[in-house]
Amino acid sequence: MRYMATYDWMETLRNTNQWLGATALSLSSYPVFSLAPNPAFQWMAAWGEVTERTFQRMVTKPDWGIESITGEDGRDHLINIETVISRPFGDLIHFDVSGREEMARRVLLVAPMSGHYATLLRSTVRSLLPDCEVYVTDWHNARDIPVSAGKFDIEDYTLYLVDFMRELGSDLHVIAVCQPVPLTLAATAYLAEQDPDAQPRSLTLIGGPIDPDATPTDVTDFGRRVTMGQLEETMIQRVGFKYPGVGRMVYPGLLQLASFMSMNNERHMKAFMDQISRVAQGKASDRDPHNKFYDEYLAVMDMPAEFYLSTVERIFKGLEIARNEFVVDGHRIDFGKITNVAVKTVEGGKDDISAPGQCIAALNLCTGLPDSKKASYVEPDAGHYGIFAGRSWRNNIRPLVLDFIDTNSDAPEPRKRTSPRKKPKGKVDQPANKNAAA
Image (cartoon, rainbow, N blue to C red; front, side, top):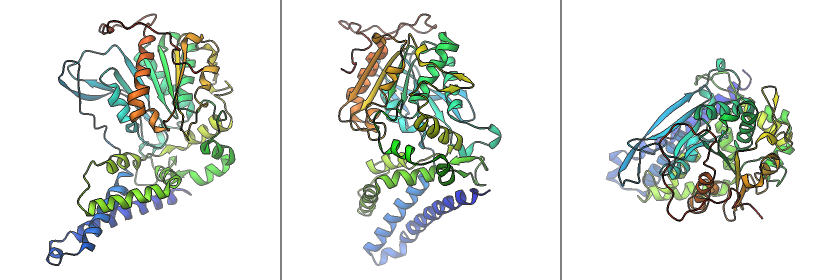
């Protein structure tokens, strides 16, 4: 019960600020005040609207908001989100495109469990849907998972990925973004030893900490500097009585958000002041750039304490992945057992979270993989988010990833599915490492 009061105190502060915002908006919007127009009421209403929305979004899971896409036939096709596998800590979901035959490219997009929901990859999913059959790992908020569901650490996360890959079969291409990169590589190596027929055809690793010490950042420095005892004492709390996961030890989303905001405090303060000004002047809209960004950025989820602590202790401090010493369910994984899964790494030249050098270390771990099955790419001007969303992803990285998938689309035993689309005339296959770093 020691940390439950702290958890509820943070939720109380959030709830109070949301209430203050709603009260200010309602009070300043009374029709009677129109008899004596005063700019102060406009600014009060604007402050209330922005404040209420801000604190409400912190506990609201965003919608995917992908309702339809335009197919090759020129028609709009509705999107249905189907649950393929349902588990206590996360689901495997499928974006089914109504009225369209199954695509040749089948992609599993592994979303991070690092404070934000899988919807953080919304633009990534939307960009892949016209050309791929897209599956996504949709992780649950730990505050909503009863204690009876048990623990969930990085070994459990890895085994979830193993089960998801087995379910989808070998006719699959996996794209892992940020935090799950080392665990996705571990899941592939696990399958290489335990169930080779379930291995995916290709693995694209985007901006993840395979070897955090390869290029130190503020994140890795923090992981080195703080002790596990300090982390457990200052970051871990018990879920309060308001949620189904009451009593579960978590790294609270609100505490994570406070850390995110403090890294660029002045920038965020200016963004909110500017938004209040726009609302007061009637220049804001429900889905303007500010709201589109912060509706997602502010939506945070609690992380299981054992997952957070084991990530820091084993990935960042112990370097178990980088040293090829990672153990899952009592079995020591050997990355050298990966021999026929093409692996490509993607890094951002301006990534200050997982800097260039950390992800490409995966290629050195795959000692059993021929060079023809290895590839790497660095997007010079992209930051951490730019390598999986935004202009850099759309214009430069996404086409390379799709080419890499097409180059490695010959499985030993393809599963039954619709016939692949024909390649455009004049297109020839390229070696898997055509984007390999010099």
